Image (tube, rainbow, N blue to C red; front, side):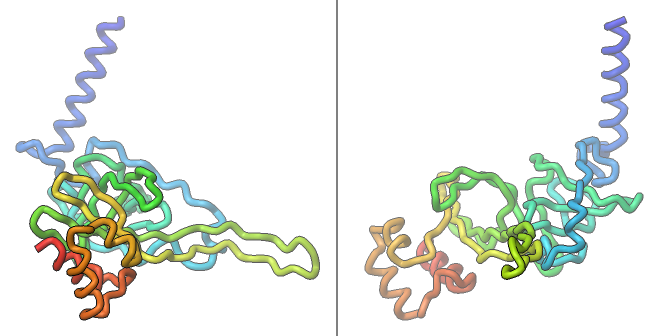
Length: 229
């Protein structure tokens, strides 16, 4: 009996893989993928929440990793995950697997990569970062984040209640070095100089001459491009 069950399981598994992949072994679409997709469990209070967990509520055309067919996706910056709507009109969430690790939004162009990185606090994390540019083995990333705050009821008639809300946080920037390590860039000159002590004078001159703000994306790109020449 156990042998029959094992044979049946292997047969079903083979059938699923065969159906969902093309002859060259590539995943044909998100709809047919044998890789499991998780259905989103939405909080019922979200409809009464100020703001949005999405930087862009629209589903945009995207190329997903190794998947042959493009799909319509949107990024949930609060949950740090990508969603799409299938043919049954269900909202689904992509699993964080190697085949889906790079997601390229067509318009406006943006490349998200699911990577391991170290935050400024020293905390090790994994999530989606936006690839801003690559040069000489280095990659500059941007992290987008929206935080959810619960509603706070008034404790007395003198207090004011606070509605649940989504609040966009400031973008943070990460640098991938040639050795593969990805770490958060400091948002001040003092911290940056500690990372590149051998270029201390050059950095100080460049920041002063170009009026660099380490919290502005274009300024950070300009500075890192200069540093990794």
